[in-house]
Amino acid sequence: MSNAFEEAQQQLRRALAVYPVSEGLRVRLAHPEREVTVSIPVQMDDGSLRVFEGYRVQYSSLRGPYKGGIRYHPDADINEVRALAFWMTFKCAVAGIPMGGGKGGVTVNPKTLSTGEIERLTRGFVQKLAPILGPQRDVPGPDVGTNAVVLGIIADEYSKIVGKPTPAVATGKPIHEGGSEGRAAATGAGGMYTLMALLPHLTKKKPRDMSVAIQGFGNVGSFLARYLAKEGFNVIALSDSRGGIYSDKGLDSDAAEKHKRENGVLEGFSGTKNITNEELLELPCDIVVPAALENAITKKNAKKIRAGIVLEMANGPTSTEADDVLFKKGIQVIPDVLANGGGVIVSTYEWEQNLKGEHWSEKEVLKKLRILLTRESKNVYDRSKKLKTDLRRAAFALALERLDAALSKKYSNI
Ligand code: NAD
Image 1 (cartoon, helix red, strand yellow):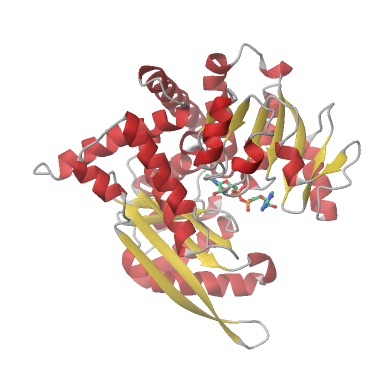
Image 2: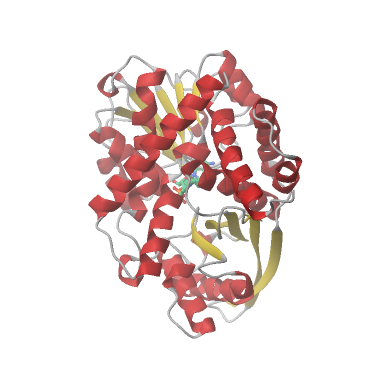
């Protein structure tokens, strides 16, 4: 059982110490509004029947419909999904988008399932969740282990259940099924925009003089590597769940991706040395990027981190104890609720396009994303100066201010 939710609540308590809010909001943020656990029977290809457990946590609807990805992972449990739903609430508020916070998950290793089994599992999950989903109620998106195909199936199954095409019920769909241009790249691109907006405040160095190590070479990590390289940063290390690669001279992430596609692993990529995931985080570099799962940086390894900046692209990669160690070492942490907001922001653009029957170009989408994240990064930085605190507490404070405003608008008697 993960303790991610306890970590998330700890972050909230620390933010409340520098930015106190009404009791009405504090009490609400300590508990999710609704949690649903479902059993999903799935006919397997060999004819057997297996039952999978699925979850949806609807944490807060103060600022709009619940919004958050669906994770397919063997370690997904209600506690983890609850923490992720909590972070979504803050992420949407930091971004200023009209969405609440939610998250879903199924305890499954999708790599062990055929495409047919994944489709039946996904349709079964939607059948169980349909009463609580809807474009104005709860809008799932992708997360670890799910992709555009899965999200397309979610929208299709929901549309069948309600008897009319309802693409706005899910985001991150394939383009020809109502997906948004730029959605796949959004989280990685957003990480780069956030970093570029904050960089002049954090260091005198220029991107071309800075090296980056990225843990997690999936959707988020691979796009981020590409965008950072375009800005001139030197990507020196990459990793996936099986291990990593490193070259102090820098490596070509597109070629590494090709190597992984052809060989199934990053290891053995020419001109690089194989390293472990632990070693990657401790490399001498300017920026380290956890872009895999929660709890990558803990009290145990935080003291060994040598980068000056941690760019949190995964959700909840740094424990609060590690935060304190990094702070004492003068390492700046750009928090997940700001840095990886690109995905949910473009998901919200997709929802908006579906509701209006529009289709925006990738250039338009990424321009809107850049403007929004540049503005909110500055907002977070300014708050950190005003409150004399770190960027995580400052981002939480910005979200708390917006959530408090939404609460007083909804329930003026509290
Ligand atoms: P993904 O499944 O595409 O990729 C995850 C990557 O992490 C893979 O390369 C996998 O091999 C690697 N990995 C898994 N376990 C690992 C471990 N123990 N050590 C090192 N690497 C490991 O998932 P993703 O969509 O890229 O998401 C990555 C992170 O970003 C997650 O924390 C997710 O919640 C977060 N996130 C994703 C999005 C999005 O739009 N996809 C948005 C916001 C946040």
